[in-house]
Image 1: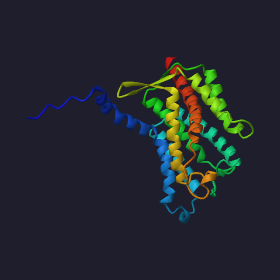
Image 2: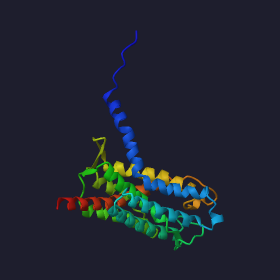
Image 3: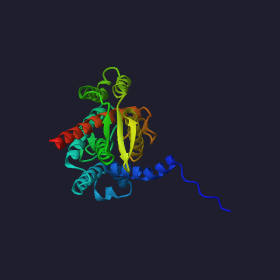
Image 4: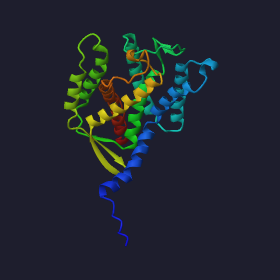
Length: 270
C-alpha cells in the first residue's frame, strides 16, 4: 500500500517559489557586467590581430555598443546611464592613479589608451553601478535606519580617497570599515521576490556584492583584462584582501545610486 506523499515544509515550499525568480532577476541585473566579461573573452576566439584591431579597442567598442543597446531597448533608464557614467569616471580616475603607482598594469598597445589606461577600464566599475541600479529597481529595494546623508557622504568619500592617500600615508581601510559598520549597524535593506519580502542588514549586502565582484575580478584577470604584479609570470588568483577593497567601492556606488533613487522619489511626490 502506497503511503501518501508528505506536503513540503513551508520553508522549502517558499524556497522553491522564490529561488529561480531571484536567480533570474539577479542575472538580469548583471546583464551589463556579464556582457563586459563576455567581451573580454571574445578576443581569445576572434582573429583580432588579422583584422588590425587591438584587444582593448575591441572591448571598448563592445561596451559602448552594449550600453547603447540597453538604452535603445529601455533595459535601463537614461538617468541610470548618467549615474553609471559618473561611476565610470570615478573608476577611470582611480585606474590612472593606480597604474601610475604600479598597482596593476595594462601591458598591451591600443588607440584607446589614455595615461596608460584603456578607456574600457571605467566600464568595469560602471558594471557595478549598473548592477546596483538594476537590482534596486527589479527587487523594489527600500531602506530603513539609514544614517544622515552627510555622514554617508563623508564615509564614502573617505573610502574613495583612501585608495589614493594610502600611497603617501597610513592605510585607513580597516578604520573606515569599522566606521561604516557602526554607521550602518541599524540599516536594513528590504527587497521583494515574487511579492515575498526579505530583509538583510545593509553591511552584509555590501560584503556579498564585494565578494561577487572579487570573483568576477578573478575571471577578468584570467582573461587578461589587466595584470597585477604577482601575475606577471602567469595568472594567479587575486589576493583575497581585494574583497574589502571592492566592498568599500560598493559603498561608493551605493551612495551614488541611492542619491538617484531619492531624487526620483522626490520627483514622484511633486
